[in-house]
Image 1 (tube, rainbow, N blue to C red):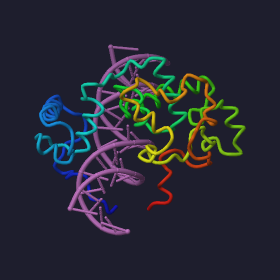
Image 2: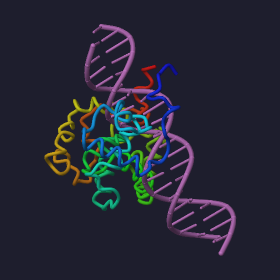
Image 3: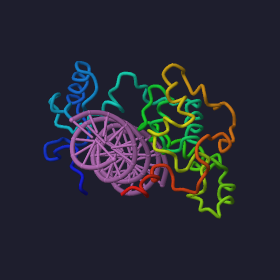
Image 4: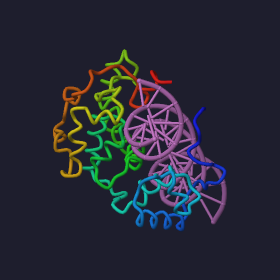
Length: 210
DNA sequence: AAAGCCCTCAACCGCATCCTG
DNA sequence: GCAGGATGCGGTTGAGGGCTT
């Protein structure tokens, strides 16, 4: 496509990071802080593209990461947040200090999906599979999720009514503004747009752009 | 003990959105 | 208001390790 590549692929390493690369990245960020990912690799003496450095730092090297050891509470929270937000992994991660969007996404796909299926729940709609199927003259896969199925882009969520819990992440441990302790009928609690039978999360804007 | 299969997770890719001039 | 660049996000892939046969 017409986009310029994010970096010169010919001169960048790919694949797994070596310890030395990690050390360089950590050292550089400790010394200079995050930011300007595009120029960071050169400045740090890394043959990586900025994106790759950012990802490595965010998902693996950051000192405040927990990594692994998801508790049942974490599971339940993720499930509830997913019911509310859909595949907005970064927002979900924001409610779980020390977790990254990538980690949660992986954990969802490998563990929680299965957990929900075992419970007879549809991981997309968060409804009982039979009900979800029945409810769909709609196809199962597009059965209306209980979260806004064509949610506003993440950034716009900042303007959404539940934005308050996003910004509250830091000060309060978890979702003080969401009634996550209840077995919510989430479809009732959503402040956002009325449910549409729209494609799931990310696909939204695509249709009217490009 | 070996081979094949399955699962997990780190990393990449492409697109969307934000930011700046 | 527009264009281009930078950053962030979500989907997907592939390597490696563990498990099963």
